[in-house]
Amino acid sequence: MMEHGMATSKAKTSRSKLEVMHPDAAGIDVGGSMHFVAVPNEAAEQSVRPFGVYTRDLHAMADWLQGCGVKIVAMESTGVYWIPLYELLERRGFEVMLVDARQVKNVSGRKSDVLDCQWIQQLLSYGLLKAAFRPQDQFCELREFNRLRTRLLADQGRSVQHMQKAMTLMNIQLSQAISDVAGVTGQKIVRAIVEGERDAKVLAAYRDGRIKASEEEIAASLQGTWRAEHLLALKQALGRFDFYAQQLQECEAEIQRVMGKLEVHTKELSKGKKRSKAKNAPKFNVRERLLKMCGVDLTKVDGIDETTALNIVAEVGTDLSRFPSDKHFASWLGLCPGTRISGGKVLGAKTKHSVNRASQAFRQAAAALRSSKSALGAYYRRLCGRMDKGKAVTAAAHKLARLFYALMTKGQEYVDQGQQYYEERYRQRVIHQLQRRAQSLGMSLVPTA
Image 1 (cartoon, rainbow, N blue to C red):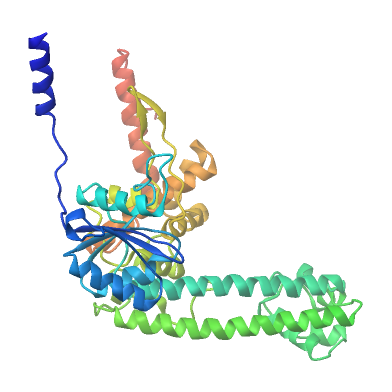
Image 2 (tube, one colour; image 1 turned 30 degrees about the vertical axis):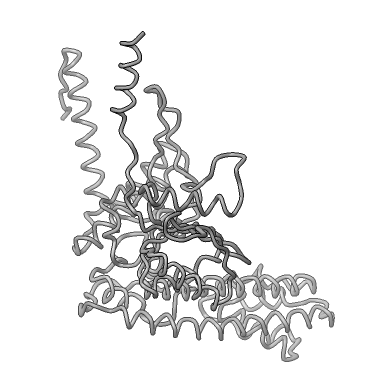
């Protein structure tokens, strides 16, 4: 019995103990109306204090933390309430860590604001928390302007739907004759209707030469009831469309200004094939601005146009040193396969659910490869032949993300080898696998004439 007790005591003493890595750490439970802050017990008589959300309260919190000797602070990413507090503490010289809510989930059944901030402080003091990725401050400004532009485009799209609905209620079937009511021909016709024109032939004369439908077909689609209530709805929808267009112009001017401040390279665009501009692309030369920001032309990668490249750079910035490798970058995007393994058995390899906007941009770029006559296009179509479309999009987005990481970290230009190059490499791989299989069976492959 004595030997057993001695062995047990030796086992207990030999166990590794958690060491305090950050004795000057604080934890904050962020809320909409109150913030709860916890510091080490020996730093203050009252180790947990509540603070309001007004600016003066945030400054009082920073003063108290400095008085307690705190140098590093961790907070949970709760809605948007953490942003003003994060920026203020960062300006005051604290090392601020924004952590994922899944990392600081407390023990079940013990949930309160006081316990949450103490739990965050304890995890941080032992070095058990990892900071979430947040780009540099200037890129945060660009990111917010770009997200605002995305919301304005969505609002403007809804106003176009309202115009179409108002015309449909009057049996004006303009959308059956032309594909885009917000295009040149559609806008001329809609504005003439709002100004009082009702003659279908006069309205059809606004037809642009690129429209496939004839003037007679357009005139036939413009014969309706012209009810007053629907005309008013059409007028107001057009007014909202113009209002959002003005706001988009102001937002794009701010995006251009911020991108000008972030230019660190003096490269010029190389001459090549003329690239068509997307309908909702910004009105300024985004491709040239991105080249001077990143040092490489991201639009040379098939599937990534200037709008997609702007969305990606605005979300992640140009400094990817926070990610040790392209695998870490793909994992943060939520594009790599999952690793759920227990007892040596793979339980699942599904990618984790993610609302990452950069990940969504890579997926959109991957879906655009379906008709690309390039190596990436051939790769995507071959994936579609092996698996369902959703998985193929994720796999192609994963490849695009790794390409983006390589371009941004190495500064080398992307050169497409072409569809024929990819198909030949795939053919050689298949032949090599067949030869090894035949050799294992005691046979050999003989090519035909």
